Image 1: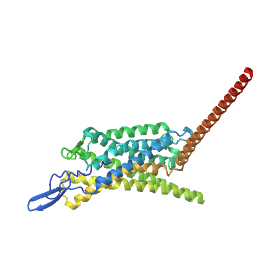
Image 2: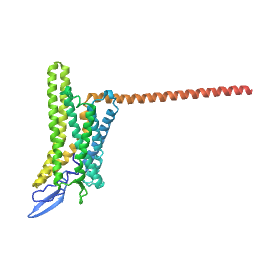
Image 3: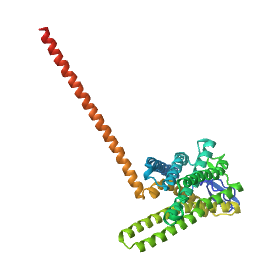
Length: 376
């Protein structure tokens, strides 16, 4: 996933202009170049921070709610796929904690005020989330494929032990694959922005490898899994021969298409533009000014879409699940009933206390009357 300040430093040589590290509005006068600093998206220092903070609050509350619901679910009601869902929510929750940092930096015209260490760490967290997020989504797709298409042949692969081992492998590989962003992320000396070191050939190759591992390969696997699922569901609809089964199948197909479309919309623009950026850098290609601004602006917008994907995951992958909604509703009712019970207990305790006080008071009054009578 991209950072908000990764985009404004589009290290690509433009036609008649070399070594660009910031946006310029230039005018050619013979062989002279007059340059003025410019950002490709006007007023972005206002609406980008607002957008990042909105995504932070939405992602924080949504993923935290998912973790609470699944974490408090009884073992008898738990499903194996919930393990992937829980890990996905944890990865997204950790990621959204970096959004306020990027929001503040975007509000200061991409100046990073938090130092080099936080620049590296926050970028590393984003990259690890990018790998783990898509790997867990892919694992969920494979799990759905095994559960629907290969149910009889997948007892070991869908066992609790195997799924926990898979989650450990996903986290370990994500932490390792995210290491280059920890090494090749730096603060720009002049502007103080947190940017990638695109001069490194190794890092350029890692960017292309990341695009393949986090988009091309997962998309192929997801399309293969859900294509097989759709064929299975369509066959089931035909053989079932009743309207209720057909309605369930149509609903399942709708969820499948929603998952695929949202995934592609979120990640396709960024990965395409990022690949173009690196290819031009490797080949020392020349861009005219209009193309340059289009690519730079596109990277900013596509980065926001990539960020948004982590905020939408709770709604897309969980809230469309009736099983999850029932669990969430049951837990909400349980919390409300506990609150009512506490109020009843408090009320009964208060009533009992008042009764005791009144009893003690009346006893005291009777005692006073007796003593007064005795004194007489």
